[in-house]
Image 1 (cartoon, one colour):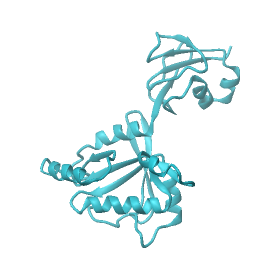
Image 2 (image 1 turned 135 degrees about the vertical axis):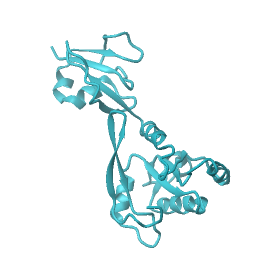
Image 3 (image 1 turned 180 degrees about the vertical axis):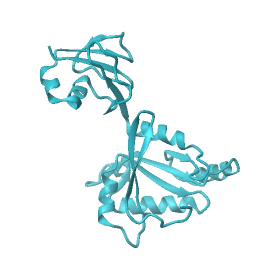
Length: 222
């Protein structure tokens, strides 16, 4: 809803991004008076924290208070980790600031003023839950910040299945991909062929070959 404290318990949902699904969890608002330990554990384990601010209600104060509360519980934005290099026991998580109620062109000036008032640079996106503004851009932004790629498997002699990619961390190798399918592929892998970025179609590659988003991989165990 368009007013605070409408979410009382963490609520999961799935966000489709092209041909994959990314799990989002809507949590209760950060509240200094009461914070469930379970919610803090949930936030620590997240791959990405998205802080939702209300552009029309002092977003600077909202951001400062939310970040201060998380840092008190040893959860630190990853892009600020250099400031905390000497401290132990911290959890560094990527952040994305979602500035909600950026409903129309008139709100652009408010958003720009908000950005100018901040002491630090933040990964930030203005959007509107009411009009849908930038929601498609949100999907791509989350995909990029998660640092993931999609890899498609191909059975010899058949076309790849582009409807069901394997999701890996960016920088993953062919051996990592083989392990995602089954450990037998890792043990018995003889040769692999790749179609995609930086290779010619069907090029044989070694176990340490780094895969890229959209690559098609054909594994041979004999």
